[in-house]
Image (cartoon, rainbow, N blue to C red; front, side, top):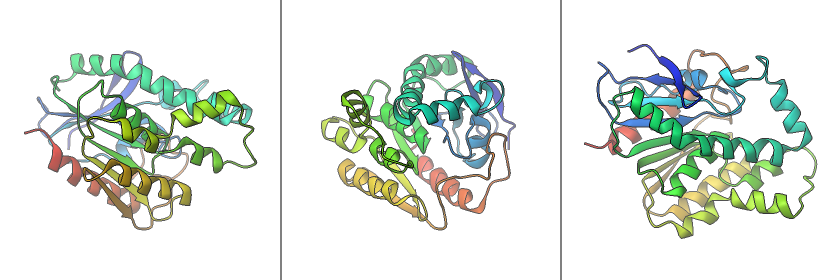
Length: 263
């Protein structure tokens, strides 16, 4: 197993896992959770997909890992407490999505991945970023995968304590992050694997089923036994030994991407 490669791509920190022997190979890009594992390095350790003949490049989400403010999550917690939707969930997805094209171009300059279609993977809030990329059609995708993903942002907000005070702007923002609703307008639907933890939040599990139904026969839903929402133990910032539940996710992802890798 090759050692991880760390670097930055257009200002976005990444942890890259090369294929065996290195060299030119297809590219799979991932976005981590904001639950554990909540950094690119920790996500790479939780879901390394070892054995895949592909580069797995795990990107850092805003204000996470190397981009934490003053080395802690305090700044994130402050934004969440002020307005979890408009200052936390929505801008994190927006920034990660907007910075991706430049990051992808930089990755292609630094690593031998060529300019062929890529694979994408997202967990939890990172799943919303992967879905933005999948539904945008600006970047050719050979296959996608999601793990306990934020498919409908309204469901995520509904899980928060108290009742969120929606207004016209926040209603518009949350509806724009409903990816089940976006499926109808898609011309191309890459193969999509949706992994849902057996013990994940009921609303997220229901959204996973709805997304697969809307996506059609190119989507597959798998339930992961004994998996709650996180994929790693807290604090989930540094790489840690892979949990048994994460190993099941890792195996499913490896099989999925292996089947769909470009020849």
